[in-house]
Amino acid sequence: MDLPKVAVVGCGNWGKNLVRNYAHLGALQVICDADTERLDRLSKEYKGISVTTDFQTVLDDKSITGVVIATPSDTHFDVAKKSLLQGKHVYVEKPLALDVKHAEELDELATKRNLVLMVGHLLLYHPAVNTLKDLIASGELGELRFVRSDRMNFNQTRRDSVLWDLAPHDLSMMSYLLDCDAPEVTRVGGWDTQDDDTIDVAYLDVAFPVKSNKGRKVIPGQVRNSWIDPQKIVRLTVNGSRKTAVLNDTEAADKLQLHSLSSSGRMVVEYPDYPNSEPLHLECEHFLNCIQTGQRPRSDANNAYHVVRVLADVEKRLMARPGLSISNSSK
Image (cartoon, rainbow, N blue to C red; front, side):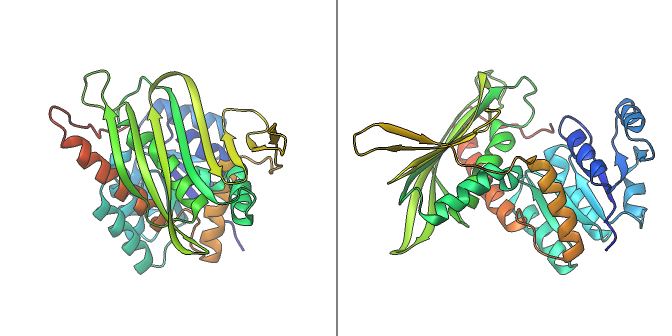
């Protein structure tokens, strides 16, 4: 089966990584960006790959099977919709959209036209995350009691709120690990520490309804995001009745650890093995495979819809607070 050919639209800090991976996979045909200097650099690095500032030429090119979108968040809906209407399969970086109705519309459009719509929830392809998912499913951690995701760094860009920038990673990963289709936020807090109406510190208390041997149960969890921490933290903690898993993605090796108490009360730490593969490479491969086979992506629009639904609800709650509004300008 011939490898699908894709165009990457938007080649900034993250888009250039998508360019690299699709080029290495032999699927990259066109690079599209509004920045001519950026295109010039990429054209020299990737010989033989076409570059353009005109998105319409991407839509009109019948040899392009898929469009990979890494443009600012507030453009995702428009660029994805135009691509789907032109019969292109679509991979769009998170979030799928900034409005729940827009997320629904894209899903309906892709389904009606039998097109792949995949969202860049990268952590669903992380080997350590998938190893942890298998450990949870096997009962290695025992009965799950609490889950928390901390994602913090120092960010001076400050365009989207920290919620739309970081929380999609946490919510999509936690829902995936727990096999939860419909998480619900029970409490939320957010602050614009620079007094510019852009939330840069936030927390969410989240309830994850899941199936259990006793029917339905709710696993409590928390998401903590910040743009004002000078030390980068990317850490997931899953507490179980037998063991607690800690996935620290800032570590170069042994990212996944299992902690438990021995019969003598000594803390024991285990380091499960997991494949040493780049998550983004696996994600890009998955998109191409879905185009070829017609299978629904792991990070499909349903997974993305619930992330958008939760964050849109959180945004409404925060905007209702006196004297505070949230900016959703492009990043």
